[in-house]
Amino acid sequence: RKEVEQDPGPFNVPEGATVAFNCTYSNSASQSFFWYRQDCRKEPKLLMSVYSSGNEDGRFTAQLNRASQYISLLIRDSKLSDSATYLCVVNEGYNFNKFYFGSGTKLNVKP
Amino acid sequence: ETGVTQTPRHLVMGMTNKKSLKCEQHLGHNAMYWYKQSAKKPLELMFVYSLEERVENNSVPSRFSPECPNSSHLFLHLHTLQPEDSALYLCASSLRGGGVPETQYFGPGTRLLVL
Image (cartoon, rainbow over all chains, first blue to last red; front, side, top):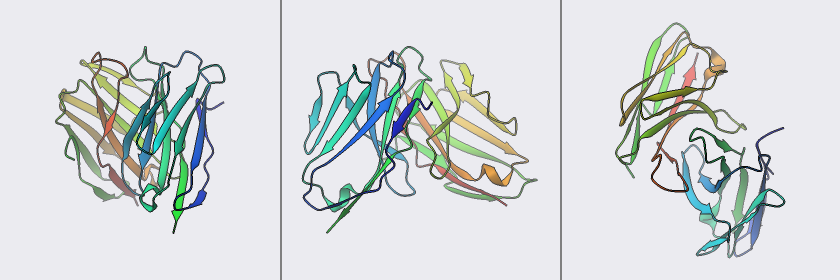
């Protein structure tokens, strides 16, 4: 069983749409959670950390559900520039080397 | 952004060659990582160095050899690679003990092609 699982997509949405991705993780002891964005042929870049209380950064909202062991990312008012692959990352927290990456969800925002 | 730099950005090598990838971080971090990213697969952790301690993924072949001379520099020495080693090699760094959550920052990667 994979430590982190994501729907690979692609999610094809029109500009202005709202889109949501989920990511499930297997280790209930996981401590910290992140969403990264990766553009084609580029490195992953931190989009946002995910806090227990949920957090928002502009058009992006992240939620954590510990009971069901998933995190979500909601993007409102999608822009063409949001087209990318979104990586879910989970860290067990107690071992610094225990970062687990999902395979990513591809988003295509179309005009 | 120049927080984490990697050279070369692209590398083509034959199976008998020896080459090295270089990573440098300018963020004052104390942990550095090598990852391999193959198409359609999640990032695979290869090696970690933190506070002079090295942790490795036991599934990484011995033809990959890391070196970390100090907390700002990380190398990955390559020798007698196979075509299936062709991938994007990403370096990352983080600040261990700097607060929760510990966050990784990535370099631009070296795209490696083994012929």
